[in-house]
Image (cartoon, rainbow, N blue to C red):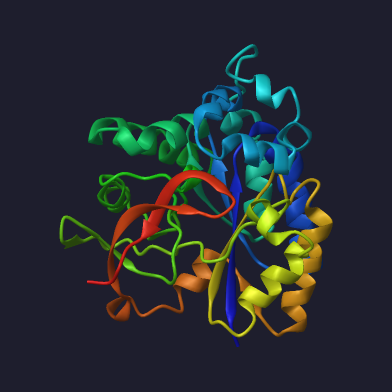
Length: 299
């Protein structure tokens, strides 16, 4: 039986309030588990406007109807409107997800700040951003986090060791082929990476090279009999307009006998001593703008 671990990135205040409860209900209806990774600081989504100069960004905006998915108010946060503090304003929602038996973890403190700044940041900047997120998680849940998933699959060379210093047990920060132990300057860091191995729905919808292809059927074909996978979804998308498609995807996986679990359940099946040791590099992913953190070749 193949396994697909489901990872939910929660980027915004609206996604937390509206998308997260919808996804939790959908997962329960379909007998599936997933890991919810929360943004916990201010929602500064509006500051992402500077990505307009990034190659491929405008194409993605046109394909995925950003305004309709995120809402105009969200796109003004941090620019014309103050960004709400998600951890404080949504504490009840966050706690309810854990109470319903779902794994919860850290996505980021300030999503836009991390996604746009971490690649070129120094160690102290990175440490502070990670520390802010972990401290807020601990305040909300009364315990330290064990799982992390980097905003926008963006990292730098300091992140793996800082995750170890924070006591994180595993992370899903990268795109890649299979779980691995990260190598930084030739040294292995004992926080295994569980990379996203399948394309996300928003990377498939509206692409010219996939014209006429049903994204759900495409994902089912990609994951059919090809071993274990990590699939990332977003509270703002699959918890909104993409929800019917996501439920169809869940049903298709269940019909094929796929085990649908969270990151904790997936990590528990791994023999860490046998995982490949790989550096983390950067590279492009079809359907997504900019460069992401990607699994390098095994050493």
